[in-house]
Image 1 (cartoon, rainbow over the protein chains, first blue to last red):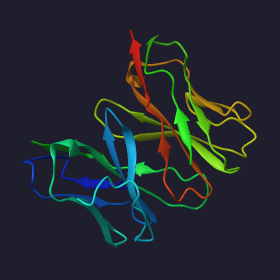
Image 2: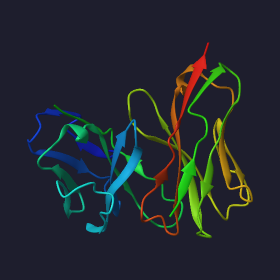
Image 3: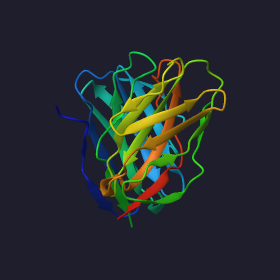
Image 4: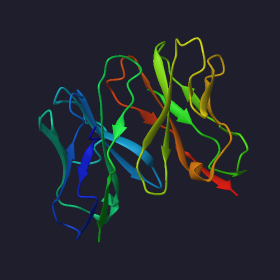
Length: 115
Length: 115
């Protein structure tokens, strides 16, 4: 079974550039989550979707961050313009929410470096 | 809101010994789930084990077991007969209700198994 697929695995960009991270969730899953991981702040939930609809984006740090889920099999997280403090590992995760015992299945992450 | 506390930033354990990783949680919801994830140095997040708040018995998955003490709001992970491949970061996480709103993670414990 294919897991959650994220691309690219690594992204190095210069400050001010636009960055787009991509995610393909597990087929059949109805929820999708974007997390950011840093040494200082650990794993932070940025935004999540249920049935392709954004439910809570209160974790998005600034207006420079935006996320979309145009269909059940694709989501993007965009940073425009990027800043050095955005450097982190960004994880996408999906789940099939049927009750309390719904683990999140994570992709391998995108390591973003903004210089 | 939920909160997870992992008080052990790092642990060194001899191979073949049992390991207990501490996790305490705080939630006001009567229905919640508790999860443990492993993150090896390669970076992926691997789901290990789940415990529901209404489960009568402690969860077990192979060498992993969850020591669930509801009154103490404790959900410690026990790894029996540790192996070198168990060296990794371990994260405790929780969600409440139906689980559609994602997981809240602790800061993690860095476990190093020594030969």
